[in-house]
Length: 126
Image (cartoon, rainbow, N blue to C red; front, side, top):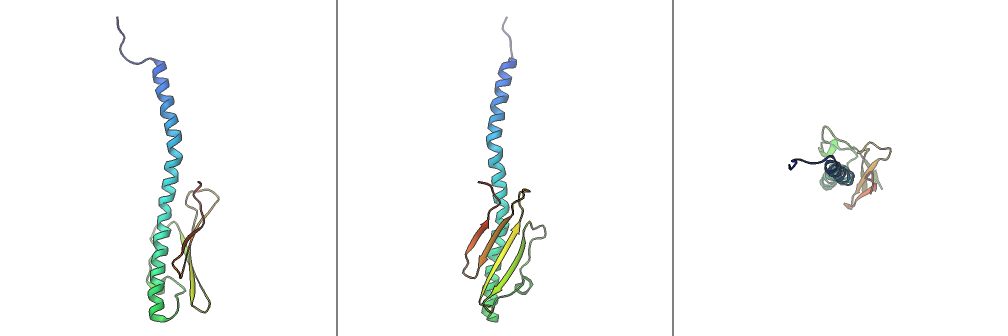
């Protein structure tokens, strides 16, 4: 008489294989989710750069706050944003800071008047 179905050993081997694949895939998934959260900072900082460029054209100086440039931060923003004006209004640096993955490290992005976008502190563990 022939038996149908799987033995307990075959099921256990299949479960071990699935667990190994999940163990390898989950950290990569988490890393990609965290990197996608960084997109917010990049987009808002690029908006700040463009707003500062327009403000400089009309006012001959850079704006010290986001309201002067009519830049709206998303309501559920993960990052906090700040602008520093230097050299009598001829240069600026905008900064985005957040803890995007719940660990003690922060994530920090900056952009300056030369449109140099830099991840000064990376919260995404490589």
